[in-house]
Amino acid sequence: MKNRLKVLRAERDWSQAELGMHLDVSRQAVNAIETGKHDPSLPLAFRIARLFEMPIEEIFDDELD
Image 1: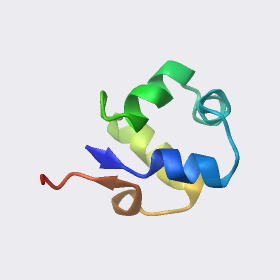
Image 2: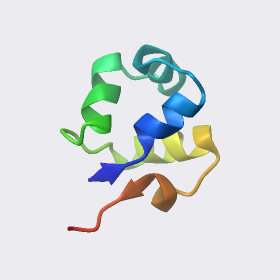
Image 3: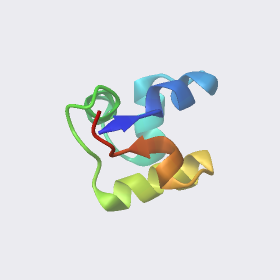
């Protein structure tokens, strides 16, 4: 699943570890989501959307190219 997490994190000048602290997940989990190796659970996707004050659809794109 494509996502804008890395861009959103960079806009706030947060490291992966800092974002992980905000979301209560590890830096490795943030990295796996950013690189598309792992899709977030639905509860985590909602936490990410709330943190960035955006709809989930603006952060994650499940369309196949």
